[in-house]
Structure formats: C-alpha cells, structure tokens
Length: 189
Image (tube, rainbow, N blue to C red):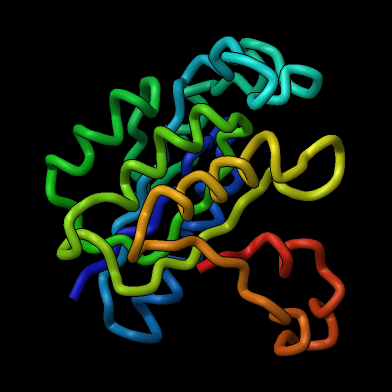
C-alpha cells in the first residue's frame, strides 16, 4: 500500500526534510510506500485577513522560501507552491494516496481553514484516523478565538462526523526523554 504525508507551510524546509527521513524509515520498517508533499506559497505569508490571523505576530512576507536551495536539499518530497486556497483543490483532484499525517504550520486561521478542505475530501483519499501536528497553538497570544485553535473549533462545529481532537495524555505514553516536550500537546487526530 501507499500513504501520503503532508506539511502545510514549508518555509526553510527543515520540517519537510524531517518528513522525508521519517518516510524512509516507515517504508523500511513497514513496507508501506510513503508519498511526501510540502505546500507553501513560495513567497512567505500572505496579508493577514483580520484579527483571526494574529497580525500582532505575523506580517506579509514572513517565512519566505529559497526554492532553489530547498529543492537541492530534498530527495523525494514534492513541493506544491501557491496559495493553499488554490493548491488544495488541485491536490485532491490529483487523487493522491490516502493521507495519514498532516503538519499544519500555516500560521494563519484563514490559511488553516483553506487547508482543512483536504479533510473534507472523499473517504478513499483519507485514512480513518489522520495524525495532525499544529505548530501555532501554544503560548504567545493564541486562543480559542484566533489562529489554528479557532480553525479547529469551527471545523468541528461545521462537521457532524469528521472531527479534530487533541490526543489527550499523550505525554504519559512517551519515553521519559520526551514526556515533557511541548509537541506532545500539539498532536491531534
């Protein structure tokens, strides 16, 4: 079988390179082929739409990508460049392998809502449980009323059978070296 893993918001590419390494290891251990995709505007953040996009933290052009430099470092990931509101629909239409993991690092509420269109795709394009990492939900001025947390709440309210939930208590199941890591509270399913 094959699965897809995705990073929304590639910027410099370190997360996408980590996904490539993980994909290599998963294939080696399980025999399941892993397609790796990275979505990014290619030119940094667009203009924030309103307060929900946390304009106190982010400005247009933040986190630009050096596409040529990144492409030289990648060995298997496919970059999908452009505004997520345009590229997600095209990606769904391309009929990728079922999505198993998504890293959301788009910073904005509005961009995250656009990326969530992938979670509305037909069931054959999604595994029954998709592990998700949300980069922008802890600290700063994030709350239930802006950014990714607001996007998650609105997605859950507007869908009767598809929901995004934290993985409660994950830190209690991690090795001691990782049990206090912030990322354990940033993983959802």
